[in-house]
Image (cartoon, rainbow, N blue to C red; front, top):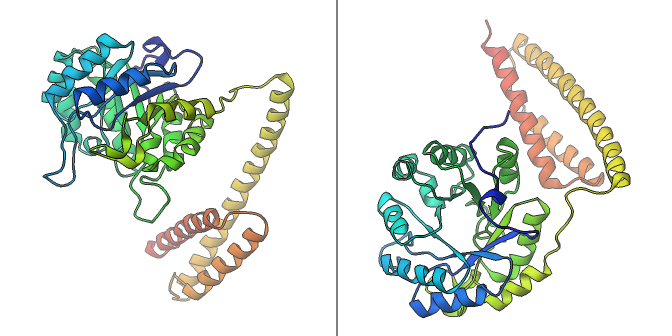
Amino acid sequence: MGIKLDILPLDKWLDTGENPLVISGPCSAESENQVLQTALELSKIPNVKIFRAGIWKPRTRPGLFEGVGVQGLQWLKQVKSQTSLLTAVEVANPEHVEAALKYEVDILWIGARTVVNPFSLQELANSLNGVDIPVMVKNPVNPDMNLWVGALERINMAGINRIAAIHRGFYFFDKTPYRNSPMWEIPIELKRLIPNLPVICDPSHICGERSMLLDVAQKALDLEMNGLMLESHIDPDNAFTDPQQQIKPSELGKLISSLVIREKEGNIEFEGKLEELRTEIDKIDAELIQILSRRMQLIDEIGQYKKDHNITILQLKRWSNIVQNRLRTGVDSGLQKEFLQKLLEIVHIESIQRQTDIYRKS
């Protein structure tokens, strides 16, 4: 079941044209010259519609560069007067909102660290009551769908209907090639839950370094994300924050021109073949559900049999043999090992739970 929010379609409040929306600018506003020079170069790229810059920077430890503050908003106002770009900044408290509105910032975004705190979100929502401004909400640091949806709901309940989500990846304790793991299944599920919600992908924070930006940006477009947020700096190697993930405006232009824009729908012949394949998948899914149902019925019988003979539920040696055997068979059949491990784990957890329920019954 979907979640209903009162949201205006993206093309009703942004002139995105035929190409994907691109939001760009430095991670941090550092100086008037740096901001204006970066903005002037970005304004030459047709896809770039919004200039972003960090004015207040949430840092893990004190003593690091925490942004230039309100004077940076003055520079953004100059960007608006000297280019056709809209401006966007991150806000984390009502004072930030008040200052951004005073300097006529066009779009606000709420960062990942703020989204994890419902108290902070509600304070921001309260400060936005009666204000007509677009708000973009980044995903929380951790992969928690409820926090992300809750943040969107709070902002929408404040009367903001020009809303977008920003997918910037998630902290993941395992080592991955990414700064923040994309976990694409989460933004895809968000789009399923809230079909009318625009979702912008932030490859810069997902990748953490330049060489992977194109691949992640292309993947985002292939998954029908509504746009990209890519950090750009006139001199990225000497940036005050996150230099390794920022690129020059000229490099951004090349990246955008390298992206392949795919059709969302094909011709009649294509759609006919696609429907045929989807029908076959529907049949197989129905068979899978029946097979899983039968498997769980056997699990119930096993659970009852163990209980009747006073045997423990978990048979570790048996489970270990199952995992090794199924993984070997599955990989030989062309399935990914990681996928099989997750699937077997889900089935095992459900099996243990069903047997536990049997043991609890008198």
